[in-house]
Length: 177
Image 1 (cartoon, rainbow, N blue to C red):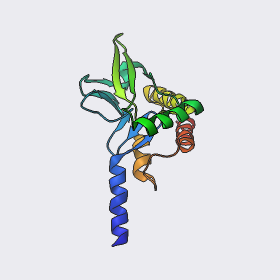
Image 2 (cartoon, helix red, strand yellow):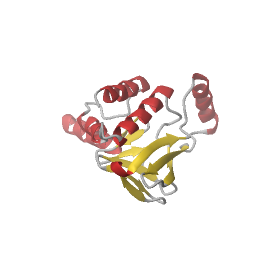
Image 3 (cartoon, helix red, strand yellow):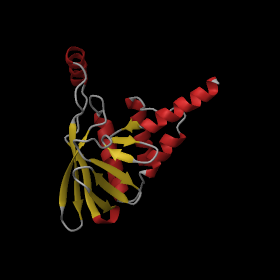
Image 4 (tube, rainbow, N blue to C red):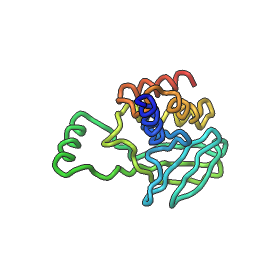
């Protein structure tokens, strides 16, 4: 019975998803930032393109996108991390930070799609850089968001890794794209 409970717990954790860099990964979808909420849009990534869901809806195949970048990303510094922890102790958990996914299409259209950060407080500088570079690889079709979903589904520990492990995974995907 304990093994069965362990398996169902693992499956439930997998269903919730995991954060890796600027990505929130579920068994079905990879999001930039957090999954959709009632107040903001979300941007999902697929092997064939990206889709904005929620208040600002739209869909773009990778071949029609000339640029995609996440702006206003909360970045962690040692001082900032200490202040964020102190702030949470005094005032409780804060709302997720709003970021902007900038998308440019081949017809010259530009879109700014607001999304929530999936990080509890902030991302490391390196994981932001690696995530932005991996986004470029998706755009150039050198890599696929399916790699992230495959990682989640095949991971022995389907949870959000610690920062160093997130950076190592992103680096590995960049080098093997």
